[in-house]
Amino acid sequence: MCWSAGADLLVGSAVTAVGVAAVLRAGPGRRLPLAALPLLLGVHQLVEAGVWSGLAWTRTVWAVIALPLLPVYVPAAVWCATGRRSAAWFTALGAAVAAPLTLALTRRPVTAHPHGHTLDYAVGVPAAGLLLAGYLAATLGALLCSGDPRLRRLGAVLGAGALACGLLWRLAFVSTWCALAAVASVLLYDWARRPGRTSTAF
Image 1 (cartoon, rainbow, N blue to C red):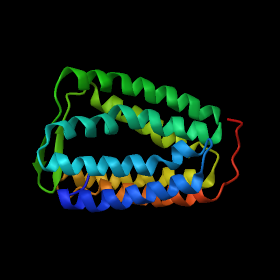
Image 2 (cartoon, helix red, strand yellow):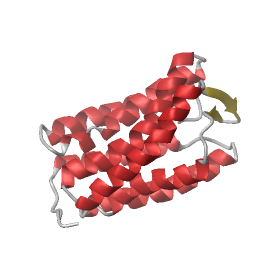
Image 3 (cartoon, helix red, strand yellow):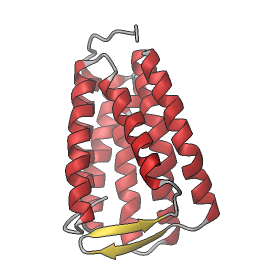
Image 4 (cartoon, rainbow, N blue to C red):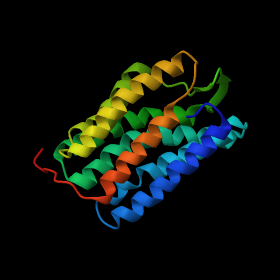
């Protein structure tokens, strides 16, 4: 999420363009799903511009991507790209996290309210702290255990960036998640354009 509708449109368009370039660089094959992640993140930002404008359906689309989709998509894409058995376990963890999140989305409408320079989403997720821990373990763990130095670097950057963005968001100072998505997209573009050596052992 960004700090305004205009910022979401600007950053979302840029990240989407990087995503298209990453997909073209990766070409067909098992690296394509992970290379397409920036495209998904860019669309997510563009959808949030609609949330700022008060469009009800965009709140649901935003939440579906952010909550049940990403904790499954990221480790599954790493698994597809690297063949690591650990990524399969992280995908299973992501699916376990996604199940109650999906259930929560079906039980009540998603609300979003401006709060400072952020949007405050309310979904009504049970055991939010436990699910957040599983969410981060699935997404970051798959990258950190990928066996690819560039993907491990991406995982480390995302972990540190998520901590900083989360603190700023909690303070309602400014939402900088879109900047983190932009950094992640550039790193994935770099990964997509030149294959690296990975181990498929673990």
